[in-house]
Length: 374
Picture: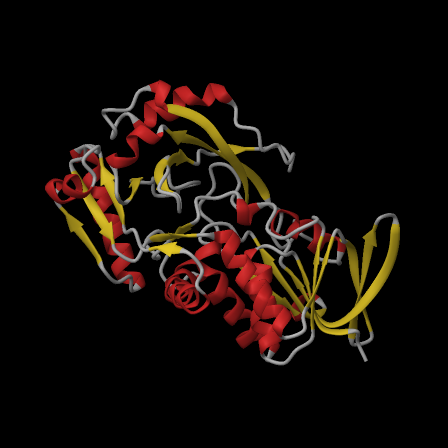
């Protein structure tokens, strides 16, 4: 008999949502996290935006899981009193040439089943966001922001209510299929030991391709190798907090790497710009914001914030996203796969879980449980 029914690698927002879901369905769960606490990487270094499902290709995992995840996330936040704000979002065209992009996103959103989505006029945008200039806009009423830290705490609370164990400061070295169970080798403070489980779920975020590789998956053959993409943010001076009441996004290109430098509102009402896109040679864990980027951020934002001065911007934070698309390649979908066809039954790899991973986290947990566990 295995030590646990399910072992999950990674205590980010997706791994913890998985633990809450699977343990509440009666399975014994162990979450193994290399950091000393939860959500130290992607889950705590992002815009904390709840997306509605506009950007993604019809019937892709990103589209379907974002759409269902949006509703599930709001329901969860209401039930467990996780702070959130349904702010709504305007995607703005700064000139008439970008209006075609507004129409393209509107069509894609409607195809995906996004509700409360419509093209609006400049006066509507300015009435709510007096500091913005634009020529047209797309409004998404189901977009918002969430306190990701409190969200993860709520998942932990539910998981522990159902007797899940979480091991912080433990690094998964590899896992091996022995008979019908996985033996996962774990290192902690120089000591190595193994834990057995019926299911092995790799939700390691930035390290997910390494975990898959060390567990016997050829990550180049199966296109699992992650590209590390840094995104920096700049805070906008508090004196300008009244320029917007909604999230403000630019029109992204067709094969976007990021959604463009946008205005986000945090739970305290403060504004920030970001993130940009910087492909890294490796996962350097360099979260310092390069102050020289202020010129790029100012040039981008001043196109739609005429009051903005460069002195209104200060470096804020940076995050690293685990993208599957190489620079210049088309957008890639999430990889969420049970690996029986590769010789690893009951191993489930979640690779390239970037945006809209936060929005989709509960839907991802449901998808994994419904399709691969129960």
